[in-house]
Image (spheres, rainbow, N blue to C red):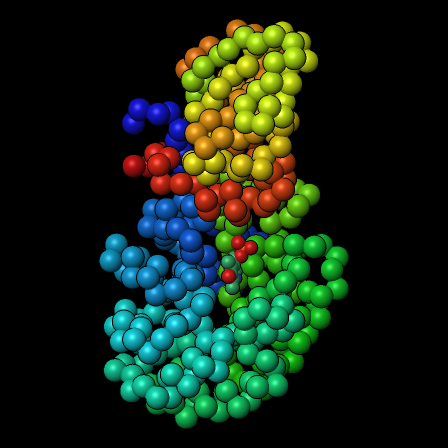
Length: 359
Ligand SMILES: *Cc1c(COP(=O)(O)O)cnc(C)c1O
């Protein structure tokens, strides 16, 4: 590694966060959500650190196959189900559990001859209006599933649109809609994402589906993971690669948007949007230099950002920089960039070297 941009993962924090989920949802089963490369943390590494989970949830077949190839043997749920009949042999061969969210998928199953039994979850649209079977279609779908030889329905799931808004009336309406829709049928129930696990105990059901909280970040706009007993897993680090002195009135970076209010030192950090640092992070976004906060100044470039070093006139090239991590919540950086921690964690790019404290 030459350029100092790197991610350091705290893997024991992942298992700590999983035990926090257990503590909040006693007696429930946990489907740990590790889609999208485990929110940027590395899917296989995350699956190993979370081996006490009862199952893993990924988006699709390709993600599940990577886990099976790595020897991960837990039940794997495909949250988007399958996209074509060609996937079915691999689903049965690897004992994968697709979510059926659309009648088109059921039609594919009816036309196919399954080589082995297939377990599925049925997804109900209880009001988010993205994926899911309309409640009034459920009785026909249930009948068609029962008429499919080798098809076994494990249970019913739904997804909440506003669980991260603490008093939003939609959540309880969705729960009521879901409970009513599935009441006539036998099967397990799964509703809760991280926000619901933390804020809506009446959604916990049989299986919970935590994602972001496993990585130590808060799903709410007004808190950070630590407020919920969570520990951040990902730290994004780099170093100062240059320290330059400028005069009052000098303009910094592309577009010259930031103007030096006095003669001052400006630090250049080897980190930019090409590494996944958000380009829309505003001037003033906190950055840690030598573990102390300094403000980002000017526009984020592909490979670099600039920071105001007036509070640290003795900072030097090579000094350590933290962009987010245990001492600087990713939630705060996300807010300052007009986005959510999910996006920042997911989009760290492959040129950033990843190191974890257990490898
Ligand atoms: C991604 C996802 C989750 C996890 O959501 P978090 O907010 O990260 O906890 C749960 N359920 C479904 C269906 C998802 O797609």
